[in-house]
Image (cartoon, rainbow, N blue to C red; front, side, top):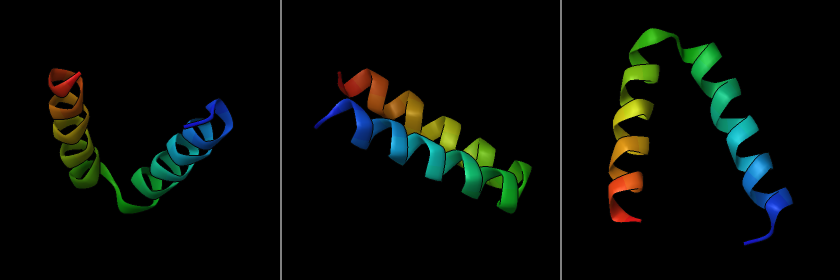
Length: 39
C-alpha cells in the first residue's frame, strides 16, 4: 500500500473514533495491538 492510502485510512479511523467515543477507542486499541503482533 502507498503511504497516502495508509495515512488516509488512519485519518478515517481517528475520525470514527472521535465520533463513536471511548468504547470504540478501546476496540481500536485491541485491533492495533493484534495487527502489531501479526507484523
